[in-house]
Amino acid sequence: TVTTGASSKETLYLWGGANNTITNAGTLTQQNASSYVIRTDAVATTTVDNTGTINGSILGATVASDPLRSAGGVNQFVFAGPSSIDVHNRQGGNLNAGLLLDVRNLDNQGTLAVGGSNQIGTTRLTGDLRQSGDGRLTIDLDPRQPLDSEQGDRLIIDGSANLGGKVAVNLLDTWQAVPGEQSLAILTAGGGLTLGEQPLTQSAVAQYQLQQPISGELRLTYDIDFANAGITAQTNDNQ
Image (spheres, rainbow, N blue to C red):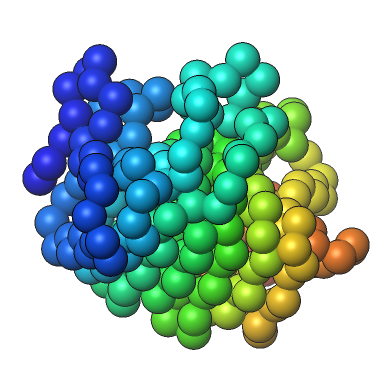
């Protein structure tokens, strides 16, 4: 495991080089939201090959100021050029994203947890996302919260998204959930969104459905129902 200190800026910073490769089968992690788990000076192309766990934000572009410390927030930050980093999250790999994934291409064959694991958050991906049949996009959901921005994770993609594989909803808590059917945007792609069959993981108490009401947006519609047929059947079987 390689980690930053609580006040450090980067876990792994690459300067210069040519055709750099980071191969991770362990754990790389950041300790604060204003630091990067991987950063480069953008002089050379860097390929990240992950079969382990990466926790945090990534920066691969040349910037005059720090996007994570920008007064307007990371989602409003204007990048002068593309990232120099390509990420291959292989089968068995876990990418628990921070506020920013400044990568040119993200190829997800493992698990991509938007906003980090087991917490509600928003992640900006500056490049393109491709998720294969083995890939899993994990969205945390807290149905107790009244606002869309607080109910679930959101992935904002500047480029395009080709989303195969699965969408897995991680239900954090159902106590005093907002009643009735709810809908929230979980992914937007400025360069367009292509969907596969998108099998959803299901819950005994929640019914989920994915919808694409407008081009480039993916919404999760859900309803928390403790009286659904599955729960009733389980209750009757236990009596």
